Image (cartoon, rainbow, N blue to C red; front, side, top):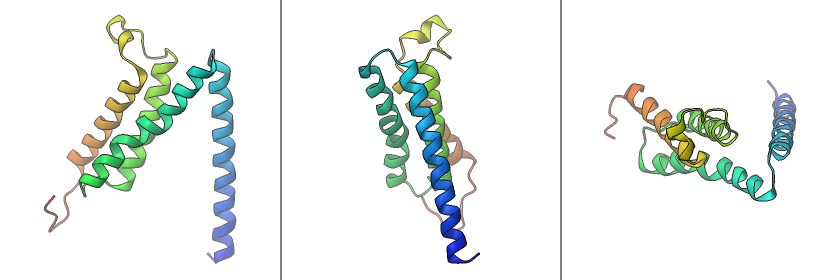
Amino acid sequence: MTKTEDEKKLVTVSRITLLAIALASTVISLLSSNIINVIYVAGLFYGVAVFLPLVLGLASRRITAGAALLSMIAAVAASLLWEYDLIKKVPVLQQLPSNVAGLAVSGAVLCLFVLFQKKDVGQTD
């Protein structure tokens, strides 16, 4: 591929991503009852999704970019499902905030990646 083909592909992917985020934001705002709820959900996207991959990625060499990305996607998905009552059918779990559920899922995904990742020769971490 030439540089212009790569740039065209990057622009196309960026436009599709922007469209997906705009659609998801519109749906979330329509499902929310007030602005405070929308701001809370926005915090789920950054605070919950990024916290563990960032902190653990800085502390360990075993957290790969793929593991961090999958952890972020899983945390956002779990938090949104939890926030909009799609998972909270068990009465004991109804008191658990969606950001805690997202952090738990993020941590679990990262731990699974680390446990099942093949260790490189010479890697001491």
